[in-house]
Amino acid sequence: MTASKSLRLLRAAPYVFNGCSHPGKMHAIREGERTFCGNEYQYTGGEILKGERGEVTCKLCIRSLDSQDRTEQWRAECMQRATEREQDERKWWEWYSAYLATPEWAKRRYLAFQRAQGICEGCRSAVPVHVHHLNYEHAGDELLYELVALCRECHQRVHPEKALT
Image 1 (spheres, helix red, strand yellow):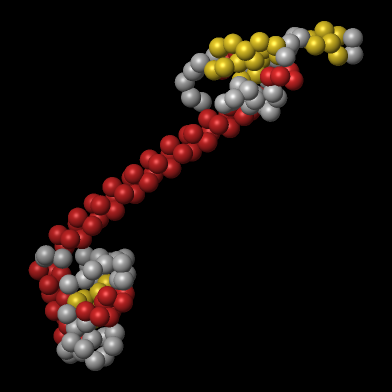
Image 2 (cartoon, rainbow, N blue to C red):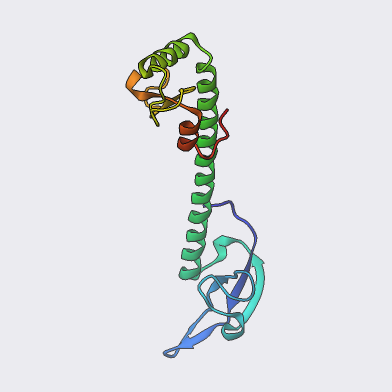
């Protein structure tokens, strides 16, 4: 539940039902003149005032406010998870970029080119210039079958969203 904040409230007019007098319920007002439970001020009567959430007595308004709180909390959690994913991805790419400059990667790259025997493993006609990861599951300790020697054109086909050199 969010911190208590001032709301526009509608104290509905008292009413009589089956001969019994009932006080009007306290509703929370959304934007405009409609309450969270769907009533409109012009049909409900009563007075509009400022107040706190704890003053609301209409069960439907309370339920709607609770739902709104859960939605806001869910959105905040989604944004937090997205931020964490972006940070994790940025860290991974920083690690990966550094890994590509290591002697371990140079050796694996050399072995992939050696296996290809100077022929692109994509088109089998051009000279390979890139080594492509089929997956990143073992990045940093790749098995050779997870690496493919490709020419520039074949590698570009695999990564159309990137401008490869």
